[in-house]
Image (cartoon, rainbow, N blue to C red; front, side, top):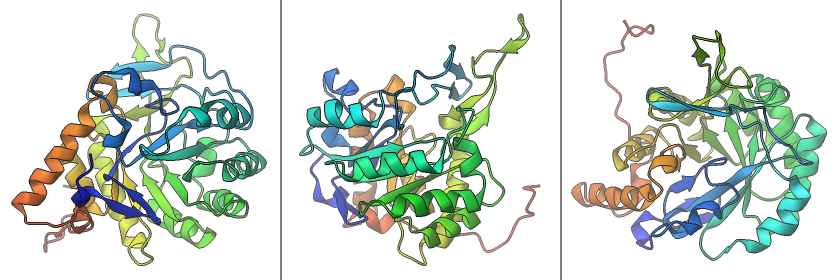
Length: 319
Protein backbone atom coordinates (compact mmCIF):
# COMPACT_ATOMS: atom_id res chain seq x y z
CA UNK A 1 0.00 0.00 0.00
CA UNK A 2 1.75 3.17 -1.20
CA UNK A 3 -0.73 5.93 -0.29
CA UNK A 4 1.40 8.53 1.55
CA UNK A 5 -1.50 9.35 3.88
CA UNK A 6 -0.95 5.99 5.59
CA UNK A 7 2.75 6.55 6.30
CA UNK A 8 3.79 6.94 9.94
CA UNK A 9 7.08 7.87 11.57
CA UNK A 10 7.82 5.20 14.18
CA UNK A 11 11.04 5.80 16.11
CA UNK A 12 12.53 7.49 13.07
CA UNK A 13 11.54 4.61 10.79
CA UNK A 14 8.96 5.37 8.11
CA UNK A 15 6.26 2.70 8.02
CA UNK A 16 4.37 2.84 4.73
CA UNK A 17 1.22 1.87 6.64
CA UNK A 18 0.57 1.74 10.41
CA UNK A 19 0.00 -2.03 10.23
CA UNK A 20 2.56 -4.38 11.79
CA UNK A 21 2.48 -8.16 11.32
CA UNK A 22 3.03 -9.64 14.74
CA UNK A 23 5.74 -11.99 15.93
CA UNK A 24 4.86 -15.65 15.77
CA UNK A 25 2.12 -15.13 13.18
CA UNK A 26 4.20 -14.84 10.01
CA UNK A 27 7.22 -17.00 10.79
CA UNK A 28 10.38 -15.19 9.77
CA UNK A 29 8.71 -12.94 7.23
CA UNK A 30 8.50 -15.31 4.28
CA UNK A 31 5.68 -17.73 5.13
CA UNK A 32 2.76 -15.73 3.70
CA UNK A 33 4.57 -14.58 0.56
CA UNK A 34 3.60 -17.85 -1.14
CA UNK A 35 -0.12 -16.92 -0.91
CA UNK A 36 -1.54 -15.36 -4.06
CA UNK A 37 -2.44 -11.73 -3.48
CA UNK A 38 -0.39 -11.36 -0.30
CA UNK A 39 2.32 -8.71 -0.18
CA UNK A 40 4.65 -7.68 2.63
CA UNK A 41 4.22 -4.14 1.28
CA UNK A 42 0.71 -4.07 2.79
CA UNK A 43 2.37 -3.85 6.21
CA UNK A 44 4.55 -1.08 7.56
CA UNK A 45 6.68 -3.59 9.44
CA UNK A 46 6.96 -7.30 10.17
CA UNK A 47 8.02 -8.71 13.53
CA UNK A 48 10.00 -11.90 13.07
CA UNK A 49 9.41 -14.98 15.18
CA UNK A 50 10.78 -14.93 18.71
CA UNK A 51 14.50 -15.72 18.63
CA UNK A 52 16.71 -17.06 21.40
CA UNK A 53 20.43 -17.61 21.85
CA UNK A 54 20.35 -21.20 20.66
CA UNK A 55 17.92 -23.56 18.96
CA UNK A 56 14.68 -24.27 20.82
CA UNK A 57 12.41 -27.18 19.82
CA UNK A 58 9.37 -25.62 21.45
CA UNK A 59 6.71 -27.06 23.72
CA UNK A 60 5.08 -30.48 23.68
CA UNK A 61 1.89 -30.62 21.52
CA UNK A 62 -0.90 -29.67 21.51
CA UNK A 63 0.37 -26.17 20.92
CA UNK A 64 -2.67 -24.43 19.43
CA UNK A 65 -6.36 -24.58 20.37
CA UNK A 66 -9.25 -22.55 18.99
CA UNK A 67 -11.52 -20.95 21.57
CA UNK A 68 -14.67 -18.83 21.39
CA UNK A 69 -13.54 -15.56 19.86
CA UNK A 70 -9.88 -16.42 19.93
CA UNK A 71 -7.02 -18.88 20.05
CA UNK A 72 -4.75 -20.37 22.69
CA UNK A 73 -1.17 -21.00 21.70
CA UNK A 74 1.86 -22.39 23.50
CA UNK A 75 4.47 -22.79 20.79
CA UNK A 76 7.29 -22.32 23.27
CA UNK A 77 9.53 -20.05 21.19
CA UNK A 78 10.49 -22.74 18.70
CA UNK A 79 13.28 -21.25 16.59
CA UNK A 80 16.67 -22.17 15.09
CA UNK A 81 18.66 -19.75 17.25
CA UNK A 82 19.97 -16.27 16.54
CA UNK A 83 23.03 -17.31 14.52
CA UNK A 84 20.93 -19.30 12.04
CA UNK A 85 18.38 -16.52 11.77
CA UNK A 86 21.07 -13.99 10.91
CA UNK A 87 23.09 -16.22 8.56
CA UNK A 88 20.31 -18.13 6.79
CA UNK A 89 17.04 -16.21 7.09
CA UNK A 90 17.79 -12.49 7.01
CA UNK A 91 19.61 -12.69 3.62
CA UNK A 92 16.40 -14.08 2.09
CA UNK A 93 14.27 -11.10 3.16
CA UNK A 94 13.62 -8.16 0.85
CA UNK A 95 14.30 -5.11 3.01
CA UNK A 96 12.96 -2.88 0.23
CA UNK A 97 9.46 -4.30 0.78
CA UNK A 98 8.94 -3.27 4.40
CA UNK A 99 10.67 -2.88 7.74
CA UNK A 100 11.73 -6.01 9.61
CA UNK A 101 11.82 -6.14 13.40
CA UNK A 102 13.65 -8.88 15.31
CA UNK A 103 11.92 -10.35 18.36
CA UNK A 104 14.43 -11.08 21.12
CA UNK A 105 13.54 -13.65 23.76
CA UNK A 106 15.51 -15.21 26.56
CA UNK A 107 15.53 -17.02 29.88
CA UNK A 108 18.28 -14.88 31.45
CA UNK A 109 19.55 -11.33 31.19
CA UNK A 110 22.70 -12.69 29.60
CA UNK A 111 20.71 -14.37 26.84
CA UNK A 112 18.77 -11.17 26.08
CA UNK A 113 22.09 -9.32 25.89
CA UNK A 114 23.67 -11.92 23.60
CA UNK A 115 20.77 -12.05 21.14
CA UNK A 116 20.35 -8.27 21.06
CA UNK A 117 24.06 -7.70 20.43
CA UNK A 118 24.01 -10.11 17.50
CA UNK A 119 20.93 -8.51 15.95
CA UNK A 120 22.56 -5.11 16.37
CA UNK A 121 25.22 -6.28 13.93
CA UNK A 122 22.66 -7.25 11.28
CA UNK A 123 20.45 -5.50 8.70
CA UNK A 124 17.39 -5.74 10.97
CA UNK A 125 15.58 -2.39 11.35
CA UNK A 126 14.56 -2.57 15.01
CA UNK A 127 14.44 -4.96 17.95
CA UNK A 128 11.37 -5.98 19.92
CA UNK A 129 12.12 -7.26 23.42
CA UNK A 130 9.78 -10.09 24.37
CA UNK A 131 9.62 -9.89 28.16
CA UNK A 132 6.06 -11.16 28.45
CA UNK A 133 5.66 -14.56 26.82
CA UNK A 134 3.08 -16.59 28.79
CA UNK A 135 3.81 -19.96 27.21
CA UNK A 136 7.36 -20.70 28.31
CA UNK A 137 8.24 -22.05 31.72
CA UNK A 138 11.11 -19.67 32.45
CA UNK A 139 11.92 -16.05 31.64
CA UNK A 140 8.91 -14.58 29.86
CA UNK A 141 6.20 -13.96 32.41
CA UNK A 142 8.62 -13.61 35.31
CA UNK A 143 10.39 -10.74 33.55
CA UNK A 144 7.30 -9.09 32.11
CA UNK A 145 5.16 -8.99 35.26
CA UNK A 146 7.84 -7.44 37.47
CA UNK A 147 8.50 -3.77 36.61
CA UNK A 148 12.00 -3.89 38.08
CA UNK A 149 12.92 -6.97 36.05
CA UNK A 150 11.33 -5.48 32.93
CA UNK A 151 13.51 -2.41 33.32
CA UNK A 152 16.63 -4.52 33.85
CA UNK A 153 15.99 -6.37 30.58
CA UNK A 154 15.51 -3.08 28.72
CA UNK A 155 18.62 -1.59 30.31
CA UNK A 156 20.66 -4.68 29.42
CA UNK A 157 19.55 -4.59 25.78
CA UNK A 158 19.94 -0.82 25.52
CA UNK A 159 23.64 -1.08 26.33
CA UNK A 160 24.38 -3.27 23.32
CA UNK A 161 22.35 -1.69 20.52
CA UNK A 162 21.59 1.67 18.97
CA UNK A 163 18.66 0.24 17.00
CA UNK A 164 15.14 1.22 18.12
CA UNK A 165 14.03 -0.92 21.07
CA UNK A 166 10.37 -1.88 21.32
CA UNK A 167 9.32 -3.42 24.64
CA UNK A 168 6.43 -5.89 24.47
CA UNK A 169 4.33 -5.49 27.61
CA UNK A 170 2.33 -8.15 29.41
CA UNK A 171 -1.34 -7.57 30.30
CA UNK A 172 -0.94 -10.07 33.13
CA UNK A 173 0.28 -7.54 35.68
CA UNK A 174 -1.12 -5.16 38.26
CA UNK A 175 -0.07 -1.77 36.86
CA UNK A 176 0.98 -1.74 33.21
CA UNK A 177 1.45 2.05 33.17
CA UNK A 178 3.99 1.86 36.00
CA UNK A 179 5.85 -0.91 34.17
CA UNK A 180 5.91 1.30 31.06
CA UNK A 181 7.34 4.17 33.11
CA UNK A 182 10.14 1.95 34.41
CA UNK A 183 10.97 0.77 30.88
CA UNK A 184 11.04 4.35 29.60
CA UNK A 185 13.54 5.28 32.29
CA UNK A 186 15.60 2.21 31.31
CA UNK A 187 15.82 3.35 27.70
CA UNK A 188 13.05 1.80 25.61
CA UNK A 189 12.11 3.67 22.43
CA UNK A 190 8.62 2.23 21.99
CA UNK A 191 6.11 -0.31 23.27
CA UNK A 192 4.03 -3.16 21.89
CA UNK A 193 0.80 -3.36 23.89
CA UNK A 194 -0.32 -6.05 24.62
CA UNK A 195 1.04 -9.56 24.54
CA UNK A 196 -1.43 -12.40 24.95
CA UNK A 197 -3.46 -13.04 28.09
CA UNK A 198 -2.82 -16.23 30.03
CA UNK A 199 -5.46 -18.91 29.51
CA UNK A 200 -6.34 -22.58 29.66
CA UNK A 201 -8.63 -25.08 27.93
CA UNK A 202 -9.66 -28.41 29.47
CA UNK A 203 -10.62 -31.70 27.84
CA UNK A 204 -13.55 -32.85 29.98
CA UNK A 205 -13.15 -36.52 29.04
CA UNK A 206 -9.52 -36.81 30.08
CA UNK A 207 -9.89 -34.02 32.66
CA UNK A 208 -6.58 -32.60 31.56
CA UNK A 209 -5.47 -29.39 29.82
CA UNK A 210 -5.75 -29.47 26.03
CA UNK A 211 -2.51 -27.54 25.67
CA UNK A 212 0.60 -29.65 26.28
CA UNK A 213 2.12 -26.78 28.25
CA UNK A 214 -1.04 -26.69 30.43
CA UNK A 215 -1.49 -22.99 29.76
CA UNK A 216 -1.00 -20.73 26.80
CA UNK A 217 -1.46 -17.25 25.43
CA UNK A 218 -4.99 -16.17 24.49
CA UNK A 219 -5.20 -13.98 21.39
CA UNK A 220 -7.92 -12.91 18.98
CA UNK A 221 -11.08 -10.75 19.17
CA UNK A 222 -11.87 -11.92 22.72
CA UNK A 223 -8.99 -9.87 24.17
CA UNK A 224 -9.56 -6.62 22.25
CA UNK A 225 -11.41 -4.73 25.03
CA UNK A 226 -8.58 -5.53 27.46
CA UNK A 227 -5.95 -4.52 24.91
CA UNK A 228 -7.65 -1.20 24.17
CA UNK A 229 -7.73 -0.29 27.86
CA UNK A 230 -4.07 -1.22 28.30
CA UNK A 231 -3.06 0.89 25.29
CA UNK A 232 -4.99 3.83 26.74
CA UNK A 233 -3.30 3.37 30.12
CA UNK A 234 0.21 3.11 28.66
CA UNK A 235 -0.45 6.10 26.41
CA UNK A 236 -0.91 8.28 29.51
CA UNK A 237 2.79 7.65 30.19
CA UNK A 238 4.21 7.57 26.67
CA UNK A 239 2.61 10.74 25.36
CA UNK A 240 4.67 12.77 27.85
CA UNK A 241 7.84 11.48 26.19
CA UNK A 242 6.76 11.15 22.55
CA UNK A 243 7.21 7.38 22.70
CA UNK A 244 5.05 5.44 20.20
CA UNK A 245 2.95 2.32 20.81
CA UNK A 246 2.10 -0.63 18.60
CA UNK A 247 -1.45 -1.42 19.74
CA UNK A 248 -2.41 -5.05 19.33
CA UNK A 249 -4.90 -7.64 20.45
CA UNK A 250 -7.84 -8.88 18.41
CA UNK A 251 -7.57 -6.60 15.37
CA UNK A 252 -9.94 -8.04 12.79
CA UNK A 253 -11.06 -5.01 10.75
CA UNK A 254 -10.31 -1.40 9.90
CA UNK A 255 -12.69 -0.37 12.68
CA UNK A 256 -10.61 -2.35 15.19
CA UNK A 257 -7.41 -0.70 13.96
CA UNK A 258 -8.97 2.76 14.24
CA UNK A 259 -10.02 2.07 17.83
CA UNK A 260 -6.42 1.30 18.75
CA UNK A 261 -5.18 4.46 17.06
CA UNK A 262 -7.77 6.57 18.88
CA UNK A 263 -6.74 4.95 22.18
CA UNK A 264 -3.15 6.10 21.65
CA UNK A 265 -1.39 3.68 19.34
CA UNK A 266 0.80 5.00 16.52
CA UNK A 267 0.84 1.61 14.77
CA UNK A 268 -1.47 -1.40 14.92
CA UNK A 269 -0.49 -5.06 15.14
CA UNK A 270 -2.30 -7.75 13.17
CA UNK A 271 -1.81 -11.33 14.29
CA UNK A 272 -4.42 -14.04 14.83
CA UNK A 273 -6.63 -12.69 12.04
CA UNK A 274 -3.95 -13.63 9.51
CA UNK A 275 -4.54 -17.32 10.19
CA UNK A 276 -8.03 -17.19 8.69
CA UNK A 277 -7.73 -14.12 6.45
CA UNK A 278 -4.18 -13.74 5.07
CA UNK A 279 -5.21 -10.79 2.89
CA UNK A 280 -6.77 -8.78 5.70
CA UNK A 281 -4.10 -6.04 5.70
CA UNK A 282 -5.01 -4.68 2.29
CA UNK A 283 -8.64 -4.42 3.39
CA UNK A 284 -7.72 -2.70 6.65
CA UNK A 285 -5.59 -0.18 4.76
CA UNK A 286 -8.50 0.64 2.46
CA UNK A 287 -10.79 1.01 5.45
CA UNK A 288 -8.35 3.41 7.09
CA UNK A 289 -8.31 5.57 3.97
CA UNK A 290 -12.10 5.59 3.79
CA UNK A 291 -12.29 6.71 7.42
CA UNK A 292 -9.76 9.45 6.78
CA UNK A 293 -11.76 10.65 3.80
CA UNK A 294 -14.97 10.79 5.88
CA UNK A 295 -13.26 12.78 8.62
CA UNK A 296 -11.13 14.92 6.28
CA UNK A 297 -7.83 13.77 7.75
CA UNK A 298 -4.58 14.34 5.85
CA UNK A 299 -2.55 11.64 7.62
CA UNK A 300 -3.35 8.56 9.69
CA UNK A 301 -1.19 9.92 12.53
CA UNK A 302 -3.89 12.50 13.21
CA UNK A 303 -6.07 9.72 14.65
CA UNK A 304 -3.54 8.72 17.32
CA UNK A 305 -4.56 9.68 20.85
CA UNK A 306 -7.78 11.42 19.78
CA UNK A 307 -9.93 9.65 22.37
CA UNK A 308 -12.58 11.89 23.96
CA UNK A 309 -13.32 10.53 27.41
CA UNK A 310 -16.78 10.82 28.88
CA UNK A 311 -17.05 13.59 31.46
CA UNK A 312 -18.86 11.41 34.00
CA UNK A 313 -16.62 8.88 35.74
CA UNK A 314 -18.12 5.39 36.16
CA UNK A 315 -17.46 3.18 39.15
CA UNK A 316 -14.06 1.52 38.84
CA UNK A 317 -15.56 -1.94 39.09
CA UNK A 318 -17.58 -1.29 35.91
CA UNK A 319 -20.90 -1.64 37.75
